[in-house]
Image 1 (tube, rainbow, N blue to C red):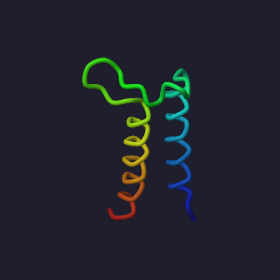
Image 2 (cartoon, rainbow, N blue to C red):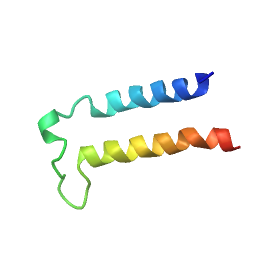
Image 3 (cartoon, rainbow, N blue to C red):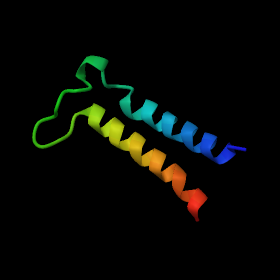
Image 4 (spheres, rainbow, N blue to C red):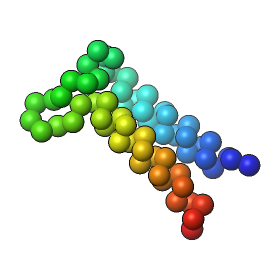
Length: 60
């Protein structure tokens, strides 16, 4: 019933694991030099975009 949603969720989680594997937990809120966002902000942004993307196929 939710095959597409499950597949998308697994894909996104695997991507998160690869992206954030090298970042220690105590540095997730640390802002990089310049105007960059901290890794936790990026993770939140990617999660929200993935959730929104999961709703689009159902509306097509």
